[in-house]
Image (tube, rainbow, N blue to C red; front, side, top):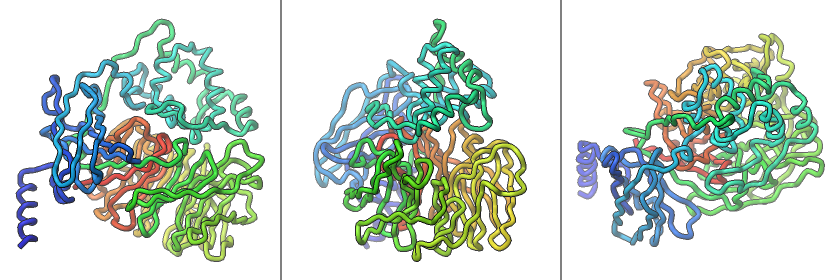
Length: 567
């Protein structure tokens, strides 16, 4: 009887097209309201965030076509006073808002927005590129060269600067000394993290080079000239600011929960989810590994052995083996560069051990093969025996098609064939397991910079094309690459998840403050706007316990992000 009533209620809500359908099904509302402004009336696509006093997380929902937002009781579990804020380009809250949420009764809070007094503070880097002067060729050049800068700050700092072209050259040299993945300089609390620097020898080498950035190399003087063209030097004013549209339709049907990491200066470059739903993460600017239990919203962290000879150190990519033990690289004195030596942390004993494979490879990323082995760059490891079982040096791959190449994220299919993304150009590299024959598979888009991604259970390698703004899929059975445009130019998608339970793939794009969701069956791409401008995610993982929740570590504001879509 109760079940039939629930089914009828769901059907009625669906027929009404209620955006809150998924929320009501999760146990009723804790907080609801309407968002409006004098300029627009009821507003769709406004991100509303609520945070309980003293909590270590906040929850964000998005208003529907009628301007209504709803927080489900399952997500606002605490009773007490909540602070409420919004994100809507061009608007601010008319006044600060708080609301008391009681047990067993939905609270109501209607929000009024005013036109913002300073739109420039709200723009993403993509919106700055859309706004400034220059041809598409010039903007693409700038995006390729300075997108690493926007891991730490948006293009606002560049556009509002007053440097001449000549003055920009030493600024470029100085900024190259900063290690972008080891510096947190967010907008919520500026300069929160520790400033980390490249190893001095590497930084000095970069400073002497006439070019700057990654391939194709651009002269520092040319880049400096363009930056001076778009900034405020010479008495120029800010350009007309162009913004991306707010979310609408399917893009509003999402709940985003952000959990504060215990250390506010953590640079969580990578994360993975174990078979129980726990999220594991590392810190690329310090020596520890952490675990988050979503059921209790609690963290636990363990120290790691420190290198003595490296000025920059910490832990990088993390991959769980079939026994739920996290493997990752840690800066080590035997290994050149900050990415260091691979090792394993045993949750049962709380101990970490370096695994010396006898190979001083400068490698960062780890993948798991179908047979449970681990792949670190060109090294294949048995996690049970902790021994090297096979290897291939990507740096010496034959049949090089010419040009600049950079082996990046590894993967392995069910037949044991090796793959690695060619971040320096436009290829996926395959090494056949039995013969070690190398095949260079070109992406349809020239200079797409395939970056990071994962192999699914159908032997399809999903990856992000960083400078082509595409999500790519390599069918390893046919060696054919299919590209899916994200629809936002210069967004810089960084990685791709495996498909969720409905076959949809997710890809974060920090320059646009968005996460893309691709449905490969239809080619439809939905983009979800993130609650803050501090968005820099390197890895996206589908929770294996439900195969629908997306987990990400946001290194720029020291948070773990849980993204739940409601359709």
